[in-house]
Amino acid sequence: MIRNILFDLDNTLFDFDKAEALAVRRTLLELGVDPSPAVVTRYSQLNLAQWKLLELGQLTRQEVKLRRYQLLFEELGIRQDPGKAARIFETQLGIGHYFIEGAEELLQELHGNYRLYLVTNGTASVQKSRLQSSGIQPYFQGIFISEDLGADKPSAAYFDACFARIPDFQKEETVIVGDSLTSDIKGGVNAGIRTIWFHPSSAANETGIQPDYELHALKDLPQLLTRI
Image (cartoon, rainbow, N blue to C red; front, side):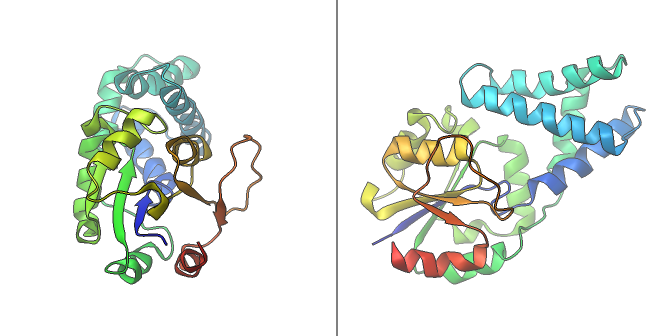
């Protein structure tokens, strides 16, 4: 029986893509750079690639923050300070929040029936600001932000740190729900807990990483949990 649910935050409960696009546009405008759809899309691609390198242990968090803008500005052929861009972006990203459809209702339904925990690789200041504006902290018995723990998903060090902070923790009573195969699902598999891959787009899994279960809509999670 499942007792502990570990939820990823970005693109699982919060619509990170929407928040990111808005923050990037505002950042580029402040720097005097045209935030065309093509430029915003290219930033997102570069950003995702840097976070993948972080997951592999090839970049530090600070390097990710700078490299995504450094690479973008190099491609655009403009001279701007990546550090300044990173600071503006974090401020903008921390303003407000956007829920994935059904996320708030799901937390309300699960709260009190399961022990809910949040597991995120996001920047601590940004995540805390977004969580504060959303008002969902009371649903969680623990919020585990990688920057605070000193380790990132999918590393064993990250999950060990989370497990150590959960009272009476048992792996067989725990499941992780997340959208990232390389971060959430790989981390859960390596940590020995069950995994639920949330992918509303029904995209094909070409990574070789196999989740225990798949979820296409958050509203279907309560019923799935009863079968685990």
